[in-house]
Image (tube, rainbow over all chains, first blue to last red):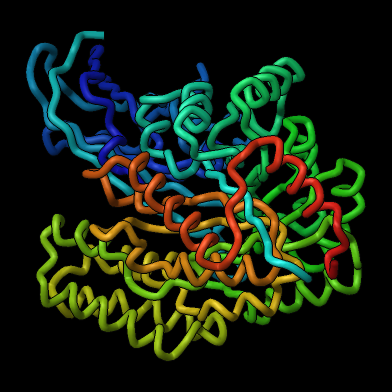
Length: 131
Length: 366
């Protein structure tokens, strides 16, 4: 697990009420959308509302409820996805960005009905750019 | 089996996860480096790690990959495939669905030129039996990985072994993962916890707890496994570092399996592939927590002439040392141990190709 690589340094962009950052998979192998179970995005300690979060990968954008059944699009380990949400980040200033990720590991079964999930987070400080 | 084995040296690209994930090397660059620096000739790849869009493999990509492997003089051994039984959020795949899921990956292995597909424990004996003719049609041996917290004499593994014996297909066997027979909590992971601020007192308690389980031997069943997992979490909590508890549990039970080396004899005739799992190399050039020399001796004396993929797992926590030097160090230990056992590791590609073909073609009881 490589959680220190979740947030891509220097990728914070802001446009109107929304802020976005590029994120990397903290795991060694590709996972389908169905295994990306949740995320949080915070800027300077303020968390974007869950319902405002959007996830983009492979050129497609999803709400997290849409990822639940998504076994066609996969997050490849060297690709960046984009996490965005409604939270303020003033352009040109430094901000502390925190991303939390919950991922299911589909081949590790920990009981008759339960799949292992991991919760990872990363915090980095970077300048926001107007998007 | 008769005669001493001559295992084939090799590596899985999983060992270089940090470099690939960090975009230091792409797939081609990594394969060229493996060849140029002599980590081969055996080459193992994880499908879902290295091939974008896996298990869909375009003809043009397969051609490019096979040409590259030929050009640099490597030998494809195992394609590690995954039994993603938990791919749906709300339920596990049925075994019929899992067979279909695995069939696509077996076809991908054949297309890419891998004679072995490493499969995983979620595939039950009935499903392995159902997959045997599919494996045979594609000329791909299915080698189910015996990985901590399981071990060779675990009831689930013995049930698979007995089914393999009944079916009698040369295309069904096991991948031996050395992580099932570890002899100590990896010192490099202790160092990583130290760097995360864990106290020396807590670290010595973690080592002591693991040593206690080593003395007791591997867990008899899932309940005992769960109890041990919980005890690592409890230890962290009692010592003021609850944040480290899950990590202690996952590594202490799922990476460092406490079975003895000779436990592998239970399934030795069915071992078609080996993951030379290890965690680090110490200042004396030895692996301090995996009995590499004993494992190589066991394989050589058992007549094993398949591939051993060096599988460096210390990359998870060791960000301060180069994996490339560590893997070279472990392969040197393997070669030295094979010589001490009166044999040698195969490092020539042509010889490796012919020995691997013979190893996979022979009857399991051969």
